[in-house]
Length: 320
Image 1 (cartoon, rainbow, N blue to C red):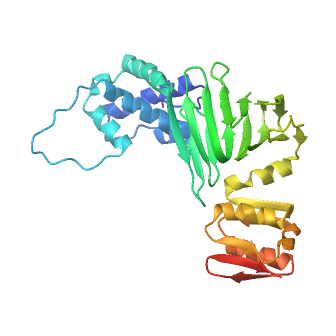
Image 2 (image 1 turned 180 degrees about the horizontal axis):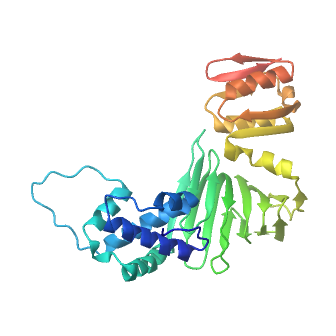
Image 3 (image 1 turned 90 degrees about the horizontal axis):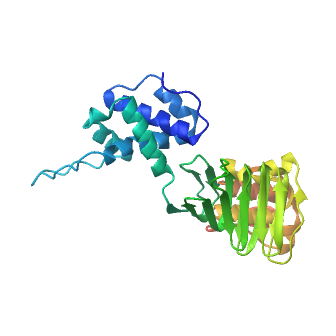
């Protein structure tokens, strides 16, 4: 069995190269232990694809055959495996080590990718170096893998980041004038225009803003609006769970205002919720609701405040 639980990127890439070589040697047989290794961590699948693609770099180009019928479109995995099956000279320990070295170069190659979600859409992104980002609805950001740093530029929205710490390549999130630097962390960043809120659930970050610098540890949050340097605020474990419930498709309320809850629901749905009387917005709500069920939320919320939910076609109005 080739695989075991790996922690470092170099170890993962080396194991991926060995699996790629094993697949190449027996293209019609799944090596024993491969599926278990892939299931151990989301980045293993990406590492295997990189190792397979690396073998293709060393293959001479395929000559086009005149008048030949074009082959059907292939997935990236199938294309990589197809290249390897035609070039079995790479099988062996030395070739696997060479492939691992080149895969490491590809892993840290400079580049910028943009990710965005629309209304009602959420997305999970796993980066090649092992960190992951959860994108909330209506979120846009760019990821730059630079030689000396990993940089996320949050343009708008909300993201939860689980960062693999690497002191030689710091992980930074830039949201307008605010820069958050990871110190081995799980943290959330919200940007609404120029307002930025940072919440740390594990580890620690350093936040640089026009007013100075601030360190936030696990269970702390701070909001930056360009007017002075805020103080760190403590949050309970339950409050942090509520603040990050969106990653599981829920909104959890504990005495939150109705108008704030409606704003959150409307960000996630085409079907909007409105209030017949703005004074209803100050009513307090409790409970957990599905973000993708605006009608159910409106009915329950209406009952909670002694009102009615009326379907108006393109919207649901809470009337009292």
